[in-house]
Length: 470
Image: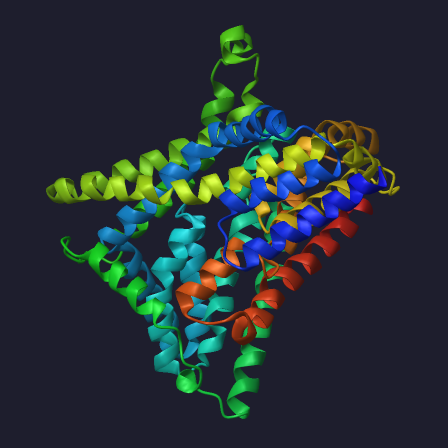
C-alpha cells in the first residue's frame, strides 16, 4: 500500500514536470498513469483500454458541444471584427489611462460572453499590448492582466458563466449555471478587487524602479500569433455600429438565463426517464443544455448579421472546430489519468483521508477540488476528477449538513479556479507563450491574481456559508 501511495505521488510529480517542460498533456497523462500502475503492480493494458479511455471518452461525450460551440463562436467574433470593436468601445469608454482596467473588463466581457478561454487569450494579446504601450505600463504585467479577466471570476464565480468550469458542478449537484448567484457575485467582487489592487500596486512599484513597457523584451513567437490574428480578421469589413458587436454576447446571456430559469422548468421532461435517455432528469443536464442553446443562438445571430459574408464565415467555422480539439482532449486526458489513479488500491487511503478530515461537505469539496486542480494544472479536469471520486458522498454529506446544492456548486467551482494555475498549468504556459514572456518575468503576478485572489474569496465564502450567513 505504501508503495502504491508513493507511486501516486511520483506520477503526479512526473505529470507536473512533463507539462511544465512543454509536453502535451495528451501524452503526459498516459505516461504518468503508467508510472502509478507500475508502482501498484496493476495490469497496464487493461487499465488503459478499460479505465483511462472510457473516462477520457466520457468527458468528451459530455462536454464536447461546449468546447466546439465556444471555439466556433470565438473564431466568428474575431473574423467579423466584433471582438476588436468591443475592445475599442470599452477602451474609449474607460480611457487609455486606465489601460489595465480596460483590458480586464474587455477580457471578462468576452469570457462571460461565451468565447472560450484559449481563444480569448489570442484575441486579447495584441489589443492589450497596444493599450500597455500607449500607457507605458510594464510589459511583464500583460499576462496577469489578461488572466484576471479570463481565468478567474468570469470563469467560475459569476452566475450564468457559459464556461465549462461553471457547467461541471451542475451535472453532479443537479444545479443550473446561475446557482448561488449572490455567493458568486460577492466572490467575483473579491477576486476582481484583489486583482486590480495588485495590478495597480505593481504598476506603480515597477515604474518607481524605472521599468517601462519596453524594458522587458518579448519573445519573437508572438509576432507569428499577431500575424495569425490579423489574417483571421481579413475579408470582413469592421462593424460600423459600435452596439451590434455586443448583440452576440448578450444573446448568450439572455438565452442561457431564459432556458435555465423559465423555459426548461416550464417544459415536460418526464420522457427523460426512459431507458434510451439513460434515466436522467432535467436537473442533470439543464446547465449544459442551456449554455449550448445560448452559444448556438449567438452563432446564428452572428451569421445572420453578416449574411453577405457567409462564404468566408463558413470557412472559418472549420477553423473553430479544429481549435476545439486540443483543449478538450487535453482536459479529457487528465480526466482519464484521474480515473486510473482512482482505480488503484492506494487511492482508497487518500480518499478516506480527505473524507475523514472532519469538515463539512462544502469544506471537503473545496479541499478535494483544490488539490486535484492543482496537481493536474486544470480547473475543469481537476474538478471532474474530484467530483467523480467524491460526488455521491458529497451530496449525501451536504444534505446531512443542511448545505444547499447551490452553495456547493458555486464554491466548488471557485475552488477549482485557484490552484489550477500553478506553474505547470497548460493555460499559464499558453498565456506566457502568447505574450512572449517567461515564468521568471511574469508568473509572480499571475499567481497573485489567479491563486491568492480566488483562495481569499473561497475562504471568506466558505466561512460565511459554514456560519449560516448564506
